[in-house]
Image: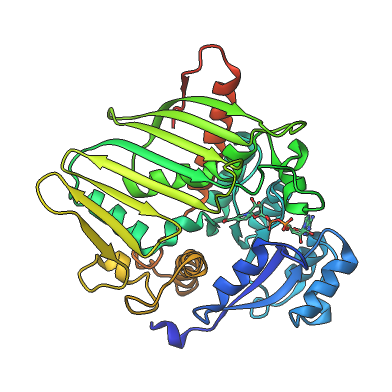
Length: 387
Ligand SMILES: NC(=O)c1ccc[n+]([C@@H]2O[C@H](COP(=O)([O-])OP(=O)(O)OC[C@H]3O[C@@H](n4cnc5c(N)ncnc54)[C@H](O)[C@@H]3O)[C@@H](O)[C@H]2O)c1
């Protein structure tokens, strides 16, 4: 069935109220393909602010709630043809688990931002619920949605750079080089009760881990982590340097730093193979550099007809009209929608369309964070990942 014949999917949002950061990005991304309608919400931890935020977005009063518990209870009373298809969780990290668990257990599909939850036990429990209920569960590792990241993945899979020997992934931000006063995003990220047991390695290191896994398919066998907090009084790491060993013998370096003064979102992945190297940077996301051992260097650009089908289908505009963060985010939503539509139709989703990070990716990210923290605290350092 063509998508044009299908109805829009109905969704609710938890978090993402006035002054929140990523909830707005999710709403922009959801709007891009016209396949999703935001019909309900519990948009803030403060009930009045939640309702005011919902009014801003035009939510009807009866579906504009002061708490996620009220939202879920109300949805479960609605007939199936009005009820939400999925919920989006864009709260600080400490709230993800209870909301995701409650909605997934009620049979509602879920999109949750990263890091998925605080502990691997929580992640394993969520994965069991998702398996038992047969629900779709997307995790917004949004960098996996960039067309040129998908192109890099397809090139690695096709053996274009030969055997992968080494991976270097770096994510440098500078916005936490000080503790900015009155910045609520900075406040909760520095609070172990809300952020979890790790700082930069969780907040952006988990994106880096996912990017490596997405592009190379390699799984970490063991890691050695040095985590440090530079800003006085900060209780969680703001700088992380890791050595990685992968199953099969490849080696890697992962850097995640939020004290790289002056840097913005400088995420870079380099994959060194026996025949060549791939080099992608998030701040110039439409370009992928392919350096060969036996020929001239090529700069591949998004939207070109010679890219893989996976990369081409992730594009919305022709080459030279830049796409970026919101479009990549929208590709995660496109994948989730394809999977939900297929389930509604009792069919299997097209795998190129249903290309999105799932609960297993989120759970692996949580284990990665735990192992990095464990390694940093140990004298031995090298720590088995046992993925
Ligand atoms: N994928 C990405 O690129 C990306 C980028 C930034 C943040 N994130 C993740 O998104 C999440 C939110 O981050 P942010 O920077 O937008 O935070 P934020 O502080 O800007 O927004 C959090 C929102 O959640 C609301 N909230 C808190 N508790 C709630 C509850 N119990 N019920 C309903 N709403 C509640 C807050 O009121 C606020 O509106 C975090 O998990 C973060 O790691 C992901």
